[in-house]
Length: 370
Image 1 (spheres, rainbow, N blue to C red):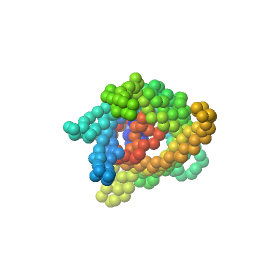
Image 2 (cartoon, rainbow, N blue to C red):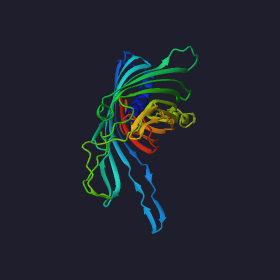
Image 3 (cartoon, one colour):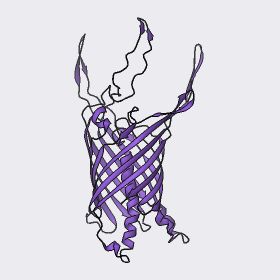
Image 4 (cartoon, helix red, strand yellow):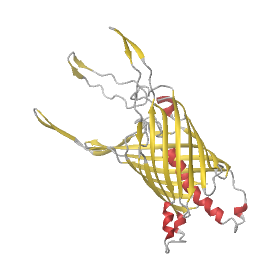
């Protein structure tokens, strides 16, 4: 999640600055100097994930009633995302992004109340890093369209660089591409529609077991019909053998600087506060197509058993987000946002490889770009 937040916030920080430079180009000699093709961004952010919430259960048995109390285990993420870019021209750039974060899980199942613990994508690591995301985006491809409608294209390559992708669940790479269009309205609000897809390549069809998960703890015995049995703790940790998706696709409709519509009001028009504020809202759809495993023959004591090929269903999700930022200095923005999270997953720092149940996330970020 952090890398995609970084890309979005970088655009939000850089866009107002670019507009200001264009407006003052005729009055400032500094603006006439060529702009450096190199740029970058850094975002320090924290996100509060409120769910999922377990409301509790109750029921009746032959011996009476039973109940299981509710639980509320929110998570707090603190992260730093970095991005370096090279502008091939005014509206096109090649960029490399990377992030690091600390995950704290607040558990309310202890006798003392809420207790902080180590979260992270593997629930055991203290600090998580993301993979490297190499991307190219051209926001103004010449398509022969008249007026202010622009065609945008992009491509992306995920390079395994995290502990999760190198050790826990080896990732070969992810190849992606996107195409879309955008238009700037008279109020300077930007409407953007984009569609993208990714092809995922993992070393294994599913996350390997006995790697980088929650370890089995304790050595107490368990009563069985054959007598007490002491479970052996795992020498390593384990992960659920969930099949990886083979393809992922997404479509997003977004509005940037929608607050500028208030500039149509007589008393608000021309206010400098409109230039200091950045706003964004987005809604989208994501599709994950799971891998199909071929038919197989398994040997048993009673003979060979034929196992049919899998037919996993495709999974849809509908993310949305809304955010408001304020420029506190040149190229520096403080932003707060609300979204349905599906943020970090086990073995998925970029949150694009699998799907989580939607949870609500509140985030605060300090973003700088140049």
